[in-house]
Image (cartoon, rainbow, N blue to C red; front, side, top):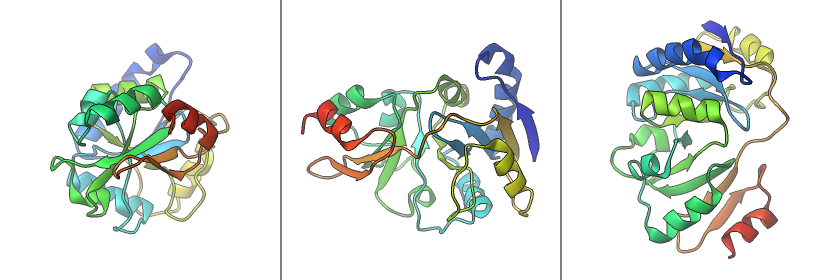
Length: 214
């Protein structure tokens, strides 16, 4: 488990860290990285073996789906079905801390979605994460960097200490220090006839209703 400190206020200083993270991700490894909500545990979301290892690291039940982040609606279209109406909605709400549930395409490994026919996707409002995705050229898993069932932490040292106690560890940790107070993303389900709010997070119900006008 390698740890690299990064400076989110000067991304040019973080180029070498991003390059190392991409090497790890392309090799099927896992990376703890900062986002606009919490620290995420990332693997290439299209690599079934990497996703399987992620489940071991988190001790996550296999039936629990794993959300992903993308850097554009175009990338989202490669893994999910997005019609004109959904495209219009996504254009209004992304980038943001809103995960959207959509019907997945066959490009998505079943292990990622717990064999469900839907996948959770978002574009983070966080330049570092978007650069990471763009550099990889593929979606990255965005599950929290913690053991399943335990509270996610904004404090990277707590995350490091916890994984040091486990046998299955992430390959690389990008240490951006303690993140600003936030919470897991809001979840909006667009896979049914009508939009449905499944979880309230940083974006509250009233804000979402105002954006979507439904």
